[in-house]
Length: 154
Ligand SMILES: Cc1cc2nc3c(=O)[nH]c(=O)nc-3n(C[C@H](O)[C@H](O)[C@H](O)COP(=O)(O)O)c2cc1C
Image 1 (cartoon, rainbow, N blue to C red):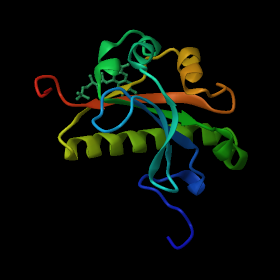
Image 2 (cartoon, helix red, strand yellow):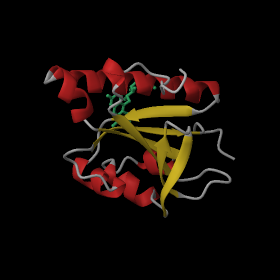
Image 3 (cartoon, rainbow, N blue to C red):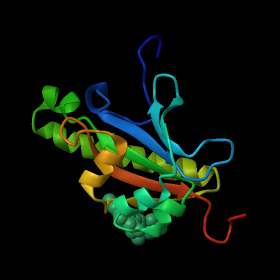
Image 4 (tube, helix red, strand yellow):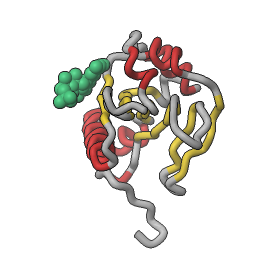
């Protein structure tokens, strides 16, 4: 809206505490690796090229489908963006917002004919280390595996 950046999901106070990382496992014309989503530019910034399939599976408590999916979208939260204004109540808002973003991921995946699975079972420390976030100021809170459905793979 003019020079004020808005997003596709609502955010308490428009403070946007959630960051999004993309672990690219298997996408045509995109190098395998870890990317950070820039909401300002609606673009992906490469953090590191690597084959993360085994590692992201391990992070998600050996749930194989996460490493087999085309991508794993990892939300992190920077809680103080919201709690600085709203105090303890802000913690709730951050998780509510993760739910809104999750729903957008499901809707967008469906509109692209892809499958998606929300993943809440993961090892916090391992996943934060994979992302290169400190687990204090910024921490992983939610993962979504997105890709072709079983039976629709080439
Ligand atoms: C907060 C949350 C955490 C979840 N964590 C996992 C998970 O770690 N592994 C998994 O296979 N599914 C996980 N799911 C997906 C549910 O198992 C799934 O949504 C449910 O079985 C219903 O299936 P459907 O979403 O395909 O309709 C999670 C869902 C939510 C909302």
